[in-house]
Length: 128
Image (cartoon, rainbow, N blue to C red; front, side, top):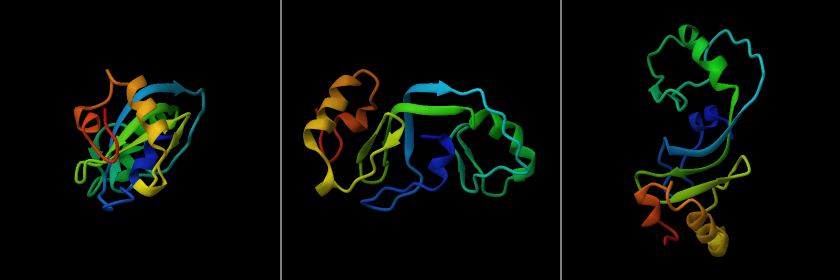
């Protein structure tokens, strides 16, 4: 998953935006990106910046670095409803509760227990 994806992701249960990210494992690729303006319109998750009212052309240097980073494993947390969503092998699993795999989710929490935010350890739909 790329950081810029957080500019468009919302919680599938309560629709809250933006989600909070904790990256556990990243990969940095050797890519060259040429942009005229920052692609993110609302939030820059890479720098933790609110993009509303920012001259997106002046932010391009940050974007070139951001585009090199890939989140391999991590977690997305909704601060409104307390739900959490795993990022596994670069893919964010943003599924509604009824479509989630309880065993896989609990295995993920156990694997990253020491790196998962407290809200996810007691969050929805499953917790340790």
